Length: 365
Ligand SMILES: Cc1cc2nc3c(=O)[nH]c(=O)nc-3n(C[C@H](O)[C@H](O)[C@H](O)COP(=O)(O)OP(=O)(O)OC[C@H]3O[C@@H](n4cnc5c(N)ncnc54)[C@H](O)[C@@H]3O)c2cc1C
Image (cartoon, rainbow, N blue to C red; front, side):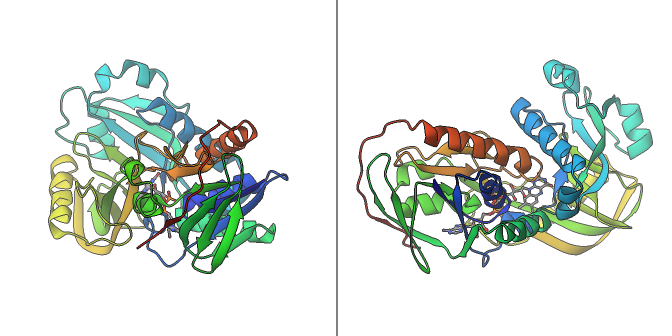
């Protein structure tokens, strides 16, 4: 079974790595290292608590795998720490809060104020404090996994997928072309992050490309003093952040820059001002100095709101997408890639019949 994974961000690299663990699979990972991808920019916050039950399950599994394996911890540069998730309407979160991660406890506003400096929280806000969370370097993990893949003899090919040149019927071979030459596979997975919609469009699947949107993520590392919170997400303002070394704090707010072109994006001063205003309101004990480093990149936002494997609708049956991280897939990529690999192999063992196609499609950009 030959599977080509396109894209060597965290999603594609981990998926290729999971697939390479199956002796019957020959994996080719198509890596284009020339682009500024989400993995390179990612802040790498990891925790188990999430509102969405599936996201929470995958995040908890990923965190458990990370924490239990010395090699993975080293590859990912794992830094243990606490994580605080402030819910805007905690009082009405019955089912979600019933499934708190084992290392978590609920905090009411007086403790959130006294211990972490969260002030003027709206009525109903509560905090979920996880004691066993932390952050990783998604880029470091990607690089280590790439090195391991190469050491195991998996084919890591440098180049960009340019075209899907032919499809030999429902269960036949997919022929593709990269910047450096042709290739064949029994299945092809686009783990191409924010480039997915554009790529699908240019491969001829215009109608399906709209499933994956893009959005800019902007944050910055500041000089910081006073009362520094731990890694946190505050739903009441949208603010998120984590300590980034002594006297430094990484902070950001979700942007509304939907539909951005993949790759680099501009750092906007007005968004940075909004971060300072939100921090001043909610965390008045935190004093922010000058910006030391800006971070801005574009991620893929899929219909499920989390990284997952789906067949490309309207595609030739063996064309899949593994993307849609929605600004949060570093924390669940370990478990999502394992489930995607297992799911993919199960699907390929029992293919769903699709009409025979013979096509020539090209990437134009
Ligand atoms: C600033 C920022 C901060 C973040 N912070 C966190 C966080 O704290 N916690 C968390 O859980 N998540 C976080 N995320 C989200 C998480 O990092 C991303 O969801 C994740 O890294 C996406 O990985 P990916 O592999 O899907 O996409 P990418 O990393 O974007 O990789 C896609 C890859 O596909 C390649 N590619 C595209 N087209 C082609 C082609 N035609 N041929 C070959 N290759 C191609 C690109 O070159 C790229 O390498 C953050 C994201 C950003 C941007």
